[in-house]
Image (tube, rainbow, N blue to C red; front, side, top):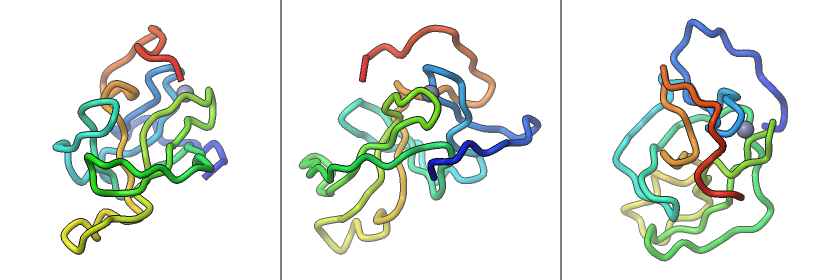
Length: 119
Ligand SMILES: [Zn+2]
């Protein structure tokens, strides 16, 4: 966290939509079936090149408290980290990460376009 990792470009990775910095490897994808305040989101076991936000925010629709994750390169919001799940059923999410589909590029996708929503 907080350090720019060099990633083998042969690997499939998800990257920041704003600056194309790799933020997660396809190997660490757990689920594509998530929702976050920015819409559809992917759940990851591990992420790279992101900074933790400082404020824990309760997100009622997810029954969790989360913190924002920022791209280490351009400081755009890329998703959230689950800090606390309110029920036993969702406990497995704690310490895991979701990246908003709107904020990232999937493997093979490239863009010079700015993110659709400003930070
Ligand atoms: Zn970025």
